[in-house]
Amino acid sequence: FFASFFSLSSTMTLSMVRNPSLALPTFWTLYRRILTTTTQLLLPIAFASTLASHLAFIPKPPATLRRLSTFPTNQRLKSPPFAAVVDPTKSFSSAMSSSTSASSHPAPPKPRRDEDRVTYAGLPPPYLHWDATKNPRQAVDSPHPLLNPPVPIPDPYGWLRDDSRTNPEILDHLKRENEYSQSITSHLESVREGIYQEFLNSLQETDYSTPRSRGRYWYYTRTFEGKSYSAYCRAPKGSYGGGDNAVLPKIEWDGSKETPILPEEEIYLDVNELAKDKTYCGVGAVLPSPSHEYIAYTVDYSGDEKYELHVRNLRSGVDVALKVLDANGGKCGEDLLLEVSDSIEWGRDDNTLYYMTMDEQQRPFRLYQRRYWNASSGTNESAVETLLKEELDELYWCDVSKSLDEKYIFMDMASKETSEVWFLATEEEESVSSSNEENMKCIA
Image 1: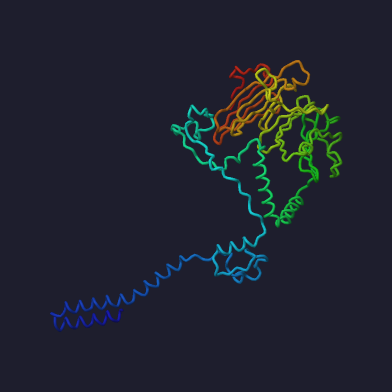
Image 2: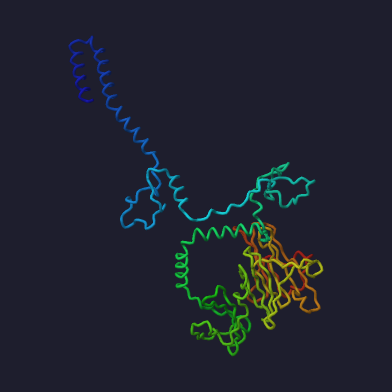
């Protein structure tokens, strides 16, 4: 290119010196030569660049279809993906089908589709008597009106929801799903067992928690090798003093599950006994009463975090599950169990309990006081349930607690940004009433 350029430039210069009238034709001759030479050089380069860009977008075959020889010798799989011999020239889908057909696993269970089932979004028509609190799928504080008329939305698998967990068709489907899962993961049983044993080897199964002083007892928990749940224990302080300032004696324990941690040890709640014949058992709070003659505890047997509230007499062993009360303080006709959150507290004496109930989203939002919870146990008093405080803002999560000196009951409310604490003095708990909005006071 440059040789042609300098050659023509020299020729053009000599021609113009000898004959100025030839300057213009000589210039056009040089231009055509340069253009021709440039085209001959750049055209192959452009073609090669275009070809390279197209080749870059050709997808690579899946890694599972590459030849095993591409793996380093020390990294080859003992049983490579797709146990059957895979021909790299076959398509990925054909390789998948051949591998699946070679497997002996059963087909996964498929729930039926209810094509006629729909759910509605919008304003419930008054003539159909819909529950207006359940059908509108819209925020309570939304400024936009509900759809009118309501719009049907297909819901072919909505029949699978059953909060009562009693529908035999649903239970049978879940059973078949569990069997399918166990079948396709059966080859991992040895791996699961190995991981489980590795965890156990890093734990001390037979162990205890540090005893805590409460009144005239030391309270602590114990775990035992081979058992899945804790046991709640206590031991009298005896000669070590009955106050909360008593010094914990030196613990001389040989590490066996038969030996007590402290002298005169008593197991007052064994969760392993509660869990017998149950598919699930989760204990929330376990609290001794002010006289230490009762314990109140919350327990969940379903796994949905709706807890039952029980009170156990530690002398007689009688265990009472609290029930929902009617307006007169008696049990409801259906004899429903009271459902609470996991946080509870005793009042100033053994007759008073505090607990939280939950809304439809299972958010604790109402604090109740129940006096004479044991009215059905032969006392002359009737049970009295009083709503002390409620938090309707769904951003706030609530729970109940008690001060260390046992003089105040707290209701803690917290969102991700703000929090509040309300309190009630236990010496005033007998004067509370449902009509009094100032039962509790805010301190923070």
